[in-house]
Amino acid sequence: MFRIDANKPVQFCDGLSRRDFLHAGALAAMGLTLPGFLGLKSAGAVSPDKDMNCIFLFLVGGPSQLDTFDMKPDAPAEIRGPYKPIPTNNPDIQISEIFPNLAKHADKFSIVRTLHHKAAGVHDTGHQMMQTGRLFQNGMEHPHAGCVLGYLRGSRNSLPPHVMMPRPIGPTGGNMPHGQTAGFLGKSFDPFLLNAEPDQPGFEVPDLLPPDYISSARIDRRRKLREIVDQSVAQLEANPDARLLDENFQQAYTLMSSETAREAFDLAQEPDVLRQAYGMNKFGQSCLLSRRLIERGVRFCTVNMFETVFNEITWDIHGSAPFSPIECYSDLVGPMLDHGLGTLLEDLKQRGMLESTLIVAMGEFGRTPKINPAGGRDHWPQVWSILMAGGGIQGGRVVGKTDDIGAFPVERPTTPAEVVATVYHCLGIDIETELPGPGKRPIPVVDYGVKPIEELL
Image (cartoon, rainbow, N blue to C red; front, side, top):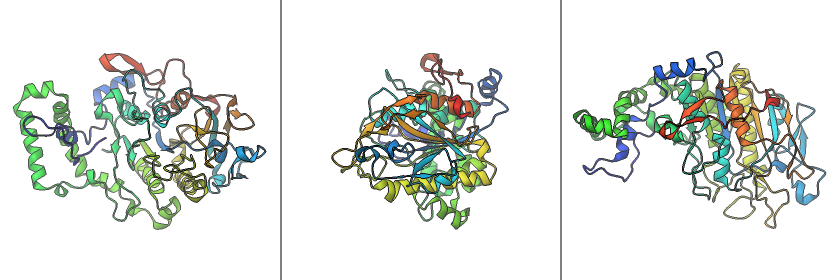
């Protein structure tokens, strides 16, 4: 993640932090060099006529399909749970009563009800597969779809191609990577990390404050670092961190001092009534900020609805501490998604941006059909539901069908890889595009043979 003022304890022998090289230079390492980008275009990796954007809402914790988008009102009470279905503006679709605002926009989104995977039912594996299309194995970390887009298309209007907000996913119990970096593509293509709370008064992005925000001592230290690099060509050639600094040092400070960049992140310019409609919470304001950034040139925004599943109210409704009770779906998390996503869909539509902006709202797995003794539901990767809208996705459709208790797919089972392939397709990226993996081994953006979900297109 791009930071300019972070502190890390690892030191070189001269007392300078190894991360000083990365943080000072990587802030604006925002895309492929022009020759590389033109080469990829000529090879057909990206479509020059399809310049789409994406807002990727990650519903950390794993929403229950039975209490959100695949309800079973005729099932026994211990299956159907406490919530009732309500009609939407599409007569063929019903969703949970916790989403009255989203019910007005069912013509804009489609539901995939048969996501499933066969890996371990832990959060981290789902995070990996839903954001990269793959389960990480043998130490290889695959790149997030937004990082791939930034690698292939580069930046627009001097803004990062991929912004992640408000913070990256933290610990969720598995001690594994979450698939939110550029992986084997390298740190140059990591997302720009907001690392701030957009719902707080006086919200500002520290990494985009003007240079006078940084003390003269820090400026002098950066200059010293640059002098060290300039004085040691051998070190520059041998040390990838130093090389990254040399390539991007000026870009980093240009971005920091960019009035355009600071204006793009300035939520205070949005009307109060619109901010309230999105919801005055981290998720709602992140949805609004995503729209603002996409409107100004960012290509891909990832919004993590929560940062962890421990000691925080999330979609992870095991029913007892340190996890969440099922009642939070109606008290907190349901209304947050209802206002944030519902207003985002309407806002994009009114601005003429929905057709060019793909919206994906997804979790990492579903929940057990039967309510557990604590009154909640446990992890269930055997089936779950996601929403997709805009960016070439047809609205008002339902893909797949589950059994009578919402436990398994019975029609059109769908995999995380197919979802990621659909994202690439909508963004104009050839799904057979090969990326330069470790040792220059070519790795396709999704596994060979995986296809987009045609029923959505």
